Image (cartoon, rainbow, N blue to C red; front, side, top):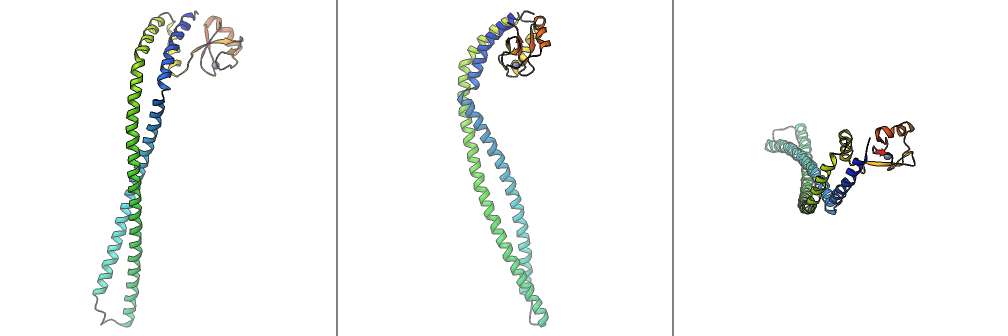
Length: 233
Ligand SMILES: [Zn+2]
């Protein structure tokens, strides 16, 4: 199989690859990726904080309910006429009263602790939200720069693409299809020469003798290691 046309195609494609690399290696692109990750982290944290706040609010409502129950019991007791009570009943009543007071005390402390936690969460939530907003704004600015850069390079890409369309017609269709598949998988160069009669010209992996013996008929063989086409010069 004649692979000269594919080599010619790849030579033109290399220019396109260079332009694509220039775009994807832009410092703005790197920064944008970092910012996107930052925003995502902030978003995850916000959700966690929201869940935590929800849990605390339920906890506070539970404590309040218990507090109100104890308070009404204790109020009820204060209204009781103690003059008619026996000493024994009075002792019981006093014990119950001090138990209720102790309960109220504990519940008050719990309530205070939960309120502090809520405040803490709110403050972290606000900080996280600001972090997210900042990251989003900066991401937008980066994106604009990337678009500007890409716009400048677009005519160059278009010119190369046109030449590729013309060159493609000379290449055997099945070979072309496989080339494009590899190229889409970010493999470049796609086709490399056999080195020292035995090795892949890219990853230097030794290729099987049986495969090499077929290279004359098939034009190319595939390196099992780096998946590239290998041809004999
Ligand atoms: Zn290889």
